[in-house]
Amino acid sequence: MDIIAFDWTLYWFMFPVAICVATSAMLSGIGGAAIFAPIFMIIFPLLGPEYPFESIAAAIGVALLTEVFGFSSGFVGYYRKGLIDFRSAIPFIKVGVPIGIIGAILLGVLSEYEEVLRGSYALLMLILSYIIIKHHGPHDAGPKTKSEVDGSLRKTKFRVINAKDGTKYEFSIPVQGKKGGSATGLGAFLTGLLGVGIGEVVMPQLVKRNNVPIPVAAATSVFIVIVVVASASFTQISSLIAEGGMAAVPWNVVVYTIPAVIIGGQIGPRLQGKVSQRTMEKAIGYLFLVVGISMGWIAIRNSFF
Image (cartoon, rainbow, N blue to C red; front, side, top):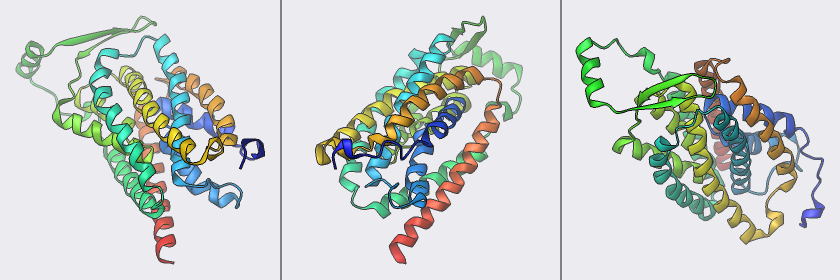
């Protein structure tokens, strides 16, 4: 099919939907592809035979491509606010980029096993929903004694982020560690393979394990996600084009989602602090639960019925 043959009005409704998705992603620090991919894989087939994509690889590839633009827009917003901790992002990027590319390459190899991918995606969503819903922030930890605090201050190096609004954020320099590196690698691999994972493992590491203030953690997470997702997305889209030409990418969706997420990427940072971070996380967690159950049912139905 030639690109010109696309119905360019078919997915018009994705413009307002993508604005909402990108805004939510900016506020929660969770990758927008985690919401776009289920829309493409679950909702589109319910709309009619002309809406579904030709493959799961196309759905995940477009979801990641869209996320790159949305998070890039959010990056600009957070950068203007002076909230991004670039130095703390580097260790996560060093682990995430190469492993994310490996996951993207593997998606092309496994694309013919669609029900396995659907089942894997369902399991991932269920696991993430449990982690996000049950997550407890650093404020839930018990109070430290004075000796613990004094000892921590002697051993810990601090970083200072001076936001453009005059707010000063001082916190211990985030340490990824072996466990954190493994989590980052797993999240990056799943991002390349299934379109979701890196934002979901980076944000908890920054907030829960390292006590980074939420505005700085969200901004830094957005930057990390951009770099990792861009690497995986470029790999996936290149594979699609190499196999099926330019028409293998559903550009008639992209023309609506990309400008929409650029808008949403500007709205999200402006709302930072006005919407409870925990409320956003719980909403995303329950959404992932519904997605996991739905995707699992589809995989079972297609395999056994």
